[in-house]
Image (cartoon, rainbow, N blue to C red; front, side, top):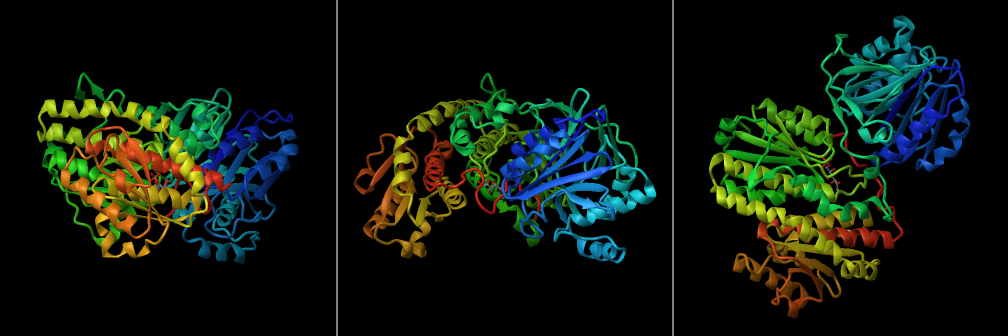
Length: 622
Ligand code: F6R
C-alpha cells in the first residue's frame, strides 16, 4: 500500500537528472503497490520542489521533465493508495512541511492520532493543504527541525509522537545531500550503491541500480547520503547490526518480458516458479529445510496448527490443510488473519501458527502473528519478500523464491505458497515420524514432477482463452469444488471478481443444494473442479452428481477434469483437462485454467489487468 522511493547522490551544485530518473524508475516498479496518484520532490538550491499528479504515474512524467535540470542531489517519490482523502493532486504525496515549505515528506501507513496533531499544528499556525493524515508528519518534522537543527533528530522526535503505522521519508532545504527515513510497522529497505544510496518500500524500487541491500528494523531512523547510511533506533541509540544481503531478484523479473500484462507473465512463469520453490529443498529424495529454525523437539509437541492469512494466501492455506492433516494427523485451522485475534482464539505453546503472505507486509497477518506470539505460539512464515516484516518477526521463515510478483492479482505466489506449505507438512511428518521415509520420498518425487505438469497445462491454454473471449459479457460465474477443489473454486472466483469485476462465487459443491443452487438459471456458467476418479471413488462420483444437478437447471457446465476421466463427458459442455497427479497436489494444476480465464477475460474487456480498481498489492493497513 503506497510505494516509496528515496535517492541520495553526490552534492555538486550542477544540474543532474539522476535523482529524478531514479525516483521515476523506482515508482514505475512500485506502482503495483498503489496507483491513484504519484509525486516526486527534489531540492533546487534552497527551494523544495514538489510535483504530484492524481492518476497513474504517466501523468507525472511530463511534469517532471524540467526537474531533471535541477541541481538536486536527492529525490523522494511516492505512489499512493488513498486512505485519508480522495485521490487528487492535493492529497498526493510528497507533502510540504513548515511555514516556509522548507521540507518535503512522503508517508506510507496510517497515522492514527493525526486529528489531534493536526489541531495542535493548526493552532500553531501551520497551513494545511490536504485532507491526508500524512501532512501532520511533514509539519511535525519541520517544526522539530526548528529546535533540533538536525533532520535525523527532528525525524526521531516526530516518530515518537506518531501512533499507527508509518514509513516516512523527508528532505529539507538545509540538508542538500540527505534523505532521512523512519519506520514503524511499515516496510523500508536501503539499497547500497557506489557513491549513491537508495531507499524503497521494497527492493523493486532500486533493483536495477544495486543488488546490495540493508534491512531496516522496527522503530528505526535511517539517514542516507551519497556515501553513508546511519541507523539509530527511536531512543537515539546507534544500530550496528542491520542485516546486509544480496538481492536475488533481477530487474528482468520486474518487467513484462513480451507479455500483455504482468499477470499473464506471472501465470506463465508458474512451472519455473514452483520448481524454484522446491529447488534445493529436496536432495536425494530427502527433505532439507534448513530455514526451519524451530527446535525439532518443539515441533514434536505441537498439537494444533493455525494458518493465518488473507485473500489468495488464505485460499492457499485452505488447500494445504487437507495435506497437513492427512500427513501429520494434527488438526489444522485456517483463519482469516483479520478475524483471528478478535475472537480470542485458543492458542498455546503447543500451537504452530503458519503465517502465509506473499508480501510479508500484510498488516492483518502481521497483527495475527504478534497476537499468536504473545500467547506463546511459535510462528512459521511462508513468504516471498525477503527482509519483510512478517518473516523477520516469525520464529522461522520459508521463502517461496518465485521472484517478484508485480500484478496485484496473486498467481505464481499462490502456487509457491501451496508448494512451500506442502514442504512444511512433509517436514513435520518427517520430524514427528508420521510417515515412513520411503513414503515421504515418494511424495516428494511426485511433487518434483509437478512443474512439468504445470507446463503442460500452460501449453494447452487455447481452450480456456477461447472460453474467456466467448464469455466476456458474462455477469455472473459460479465455481464448485469439493475437498481441495473447494479452495480452488474460491480462488477461481476471487480472481474473476478482482480483475474482471464480474460477480463470482466459489462454493463447496455439497453446499449447493443447501441454498446456492437457487442462483442457477438457464445459461449460468458454472466451473466445476472434478477430483481424480482414481482417488476416493465416492468423492469423484459426488462431484459428477453435482454437475448433473446444475446442468439439469440449465447451467452451462465448464468442467475441469483429469485426463482420461470419461465419467464427466455426458454432463459437461466443456471439459478442460489436467494431467494426472496425487489428489492433494491437483490444486497446483486445476487453478491454472481459472487464472488464465480471468486474465484473458479481463484483457478482452479492456481492463487494466495488473492494476485493478480499488486494490493495491500489499495491504499495510488493517
Ligand atoms: C488476490 C490477492 C490478495 C492477497 C492478500 C494477501 O489476488 O493478491 O488477496 O493474497 O491481500 O496478501 P499477502 O499474500 O501479501 O499477505
